[in-house]
Length: 230
Picture (tube, rainbow, N blue to C red):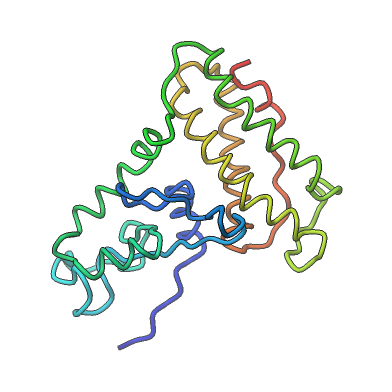
């Protein structure tokens, strides 16, 4: 059998973004950066819906030719326990079930976390205010002093505390804030929608660097987000 190719970083990033840091099995939805591990390391596993080869779980459900096994559409992000469950009992977890988990994950996660659409801007602002305040306080305490001129180096000692806070607090906070804002975009002005688009890119950059390990320049939090729903 030919050697498997590594999953591209862009695909990994899409998976983590789509999962918002939580296992995509509806009965689980556990955090993939567990607090009991300090929130510093993730336990996520990229599970293939349809496997490589002709002997793995759900192999008989393989679509017709030109099917890319390592494509985003054929991968789901699970905790180790759920990954084992779905592969040990493929009849109980067929392809359509796993794809349904993935397609409806954010809605189920939002329901579990109490995220909802609010009746006015004041309520929406209250829902994100503490999140933004906590992230800002961590930024002021731990972020690199050079700001946008900072060249990210994961090996540098100064980056260690910042890395830990990003993975354990800042990114989970961002994922929750993104979900809240998406649920309430109907209350946003055009300027706030543009700020939100920049914010999503900021979170993407943090995920790319601190989850996927892709080095690059710092991507600053858009200051206009501070006034979201204010």
